[in-house]
Each structure stands twice: as C-alpha cells, then as structure tokens.
Length: 322
Image 1 (cartoon, rainbow, N blue to C red):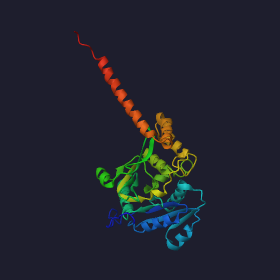
Image 2 (cartoon, rainbow, N blue to C red):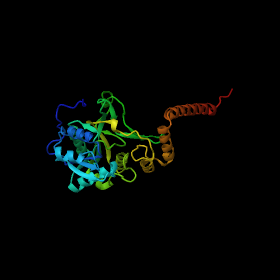
Image 3 (cartoon, helix red, strand yellow):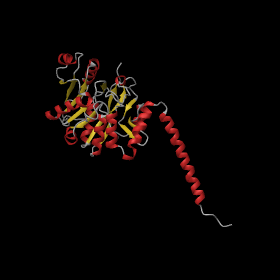
Image 4 (cartoon, rainbow, N blue to C red):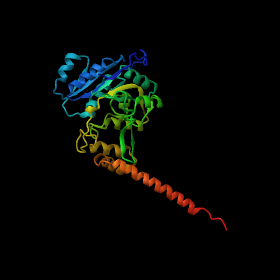
C-alpha cells in the first residue's frame, strides 16, 4: 500500500502563476522503480511541467517501456557513465536550452503527493531568489521524516546529516514555520530557478559524480545569496531501501567517497576544522562507538573547563582583611 495522499487538489498556484517546470530524473536500469515513480507523478495537479528522463545506458527495457507507455516523456540518452551529477546536468542543459523557468530535480525511487509541485512553485514565486526543497518522509513509514533539509557540524565531524531525521511529522511540523530555512538540500525534490544555473553553473560532475553533488550545489547557492528553503507542505516519500550503504571511500557509489567530501570541506568548512572534521567523519563511519565516545569526552572536557573556571574565580577573589 502506498503512502496516504491529500484528497483535495492544491490551489496554491493560480492559472496565471504557472511557470514552465522541467522535471529532471536521472535513471540507470531499475525500470520497476521508474514506472512506479511515473505512475505516482500522473496524480500531480500542477499543469505546466514536462518530464525529462535521462536514461543513462539502461539495459532493462527502460527506453522501450517509455516509448510505449509514456510517449509524452522526454527521454535523453547517456552512455552509462554519467552518474547522478552528469545525468542531471544533461537534463538541466536541455531545460535551459528549451527555455524552462524552473528545474525540479528528483529521483525515481520516490513517490509524490499530488499538490507537492504546486506548493513548491508557489513558494518559489513568493521568494524570487531561492531554491526550494520538499519535505521528504520514509516510504515504508509514511508519517516519519527522512529529511527536512540537511546540516553540518564541522567541529564534530557530524556532517551532511538529514534534518529532523526519524522524527514524527505530527510532532515536528507544528514546531516549524513554512517555508523553513535550511543550510543545504538533497536533490530528491528540489526546485531551482533556471537563472540560478546560469549564474552558478551546474552540478560538479568531477568532484561530486554521484553523492553530495546536490548538497554542494545548495551550499554554493546559499553562499551566493540564494535562500535555501524547505516547503513543508510539499511532500515526497523516499524509498530508502534503494539508498546505498556502501562505505568504500574509493567507490563513486558510496556516500563516503573521498572526492566529494574533500571538495565540500575545502570549499565550505572553516579552515580550522577541515582536517579535524574529515578525520572524525571517517572515524565515526568506520569505528563503531566513536560518536558516543566523543560525546563522553566532550562532556568531560566541558565539566573540567567549568570546574577550572570556578576555581580560577575563587583563587582570584580579593581576600578580606582579618
């Protein structure tokens, strides 16, 4: 059974506020996921979008299925070596050349609420210099949050973490105001103005070929003055069973691949924390219990410093004459 969906059509975007949106989806095989995603997208109530599917060398009949069942989908072909950033860039270039106003990046292992795109476009129009992300829940736990944006704590090595991950939507959402400002976004449901790509360039294929290219782009946009927002009423469900858990720092298929992590640290991390953050990140990824140990060590350090300051105050207090 799929996730619950709103029953009323969104009226967030009126007919005279419907900019052209290119929905860019990079795929490589996994046809059942693609068909499930496209069927979900049939329910979307936003009237002015085009589905642009970048088929990067699929050998499972993706091309044939699209031509037969979804002839309205624009299919761009790759050679199998585009990865996420290269495939998405191919779709973005098509959108820019065709004169689209916005690009929505999203993955094929998701389902979407019918009004999610209308709500995202409404927020984008109300905040002209911004990129807008969707609220993402788990597909197998439809009321549990997978991500409301993302964040990094450079001093502790806790980086590129999904915001409010694992929280209950009924507990978290009432505490937040929509649109909710965040530090960074995933590419799984992000609406970007075409002008933003023209100003900043595309996703970094060299340093972030598969993972973290979406995050790096959002951080780049934020540095150039774009607001980075999450529209809490734009809901996407993420099938996390298809998310890689590979921790090989030499593999492009891994979120621990060294190249994007080094690039992001050298570009955005305060210089005094670069080495420390990278070392701690990999320690916590490879050595079980590291995070708990560090939390304990930091607690002891804070307690020691508090006692030291208290002792200093006592020792430096002027003594009263007898």
